[in-house]
Length: 330
Image (cartoon, rainbow, N blue to C red; front, top):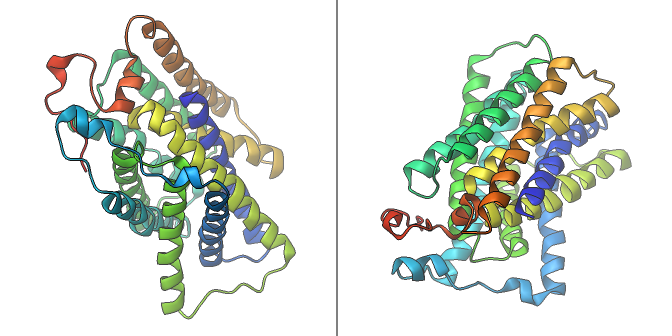
């Protein structure tokens, strides 16, 4: 189920570029898109929390108990979640759209999708994941497939500052995923997503106020595409991502997220009349193959012991001799 949730999240996020282009054509500015997206998403998630009070609970910390550490307080967990949105998600989105103004989307996407490699390396160095042969093959296939999908788009221009902004976006998203993994087991996906969206909306609202506001005078078509961005590519995608991250761990979630540009390319062909090349189709097949490798590995290891992806979700390796250094950062 964790793999399916991660792929569904990638599909939702992949559709966001299409919704964004359609919103831009309807007169929506990037600043208005970001502010409305996060604000509307936060409102929808708050309504869901009000309807389901059970989703508001902060859970005990099994990782801290297993490691003999004092668990983080409820207030600290909630503050980290808000910070993920106010600092992490708002910064990542802002860097991405600033880069998008300076360079082609295909090259920017390629730079952004260095983050699965960065997440895997960081998680291994932190002792929170192990680079198993299956995961290494999946990472190589997913990264290679993404490269083929994006390079199949044709010639692209290069802007040094735009590339720097894009890589900064990848670094911020890497940190965001790793920090999310330290609290995802304490909060329900709905509560965590609500706090992240509220934090991002707050930051963007303050920024808009300091800049003199944003133009919201666009027509119904613009609001429709903004609603699609908030509901499909933010609320649904975010919930699926956190639920998948909790079940798979940061490395697997990051690897499966490379399915996003495949979805973007396919939707662009269907909706924006952009053609798919043989190179892009080959890349898409490689990304899907990486998901299959992970699923096969998980099924083969389940009968005797936890699969590596399941070990990652608990933060503790199955072998007691390997538990030194496996503590999650708080």
